[in-house]
Image (spheres, rainbow, N blue to C red):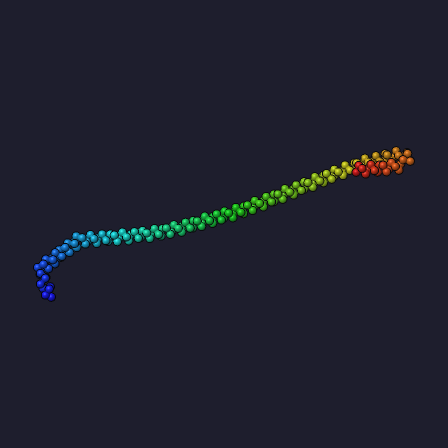
Length: 166
């Protein structure tokens, strides 16, 4: 303790204490309030920035959900249009098949009708030719009756001619 008693000068301690208090109160008056205000404004700016970031995150999330919903709606519409196109394609294919079936039936009916007409014409022509042949055969037979010897040979010849013409 002697060391302190010899080295401590009470006047100096008092001057240093008074200087410290002057510096302390002047700093408190002039620097502490602006420093506190600066820290408070900085704290407030950080808080507002964090709130803006949170709002931006919420907005981004909302936009992402809207985008997802919109994308889903577009996919649903595309799927519906694709199904509609497939349905229309099937309907067109069915119509084309029905039309082709009707046309083929009409062509078949017309061909059958033409065939029936040709058969009828052929029958008429055949009847005429048979009638003509019968007349010719009758004429020849009558002429040949006059000639008895050649009658049988002539009939065979006439029959051969008839076979060749048919």
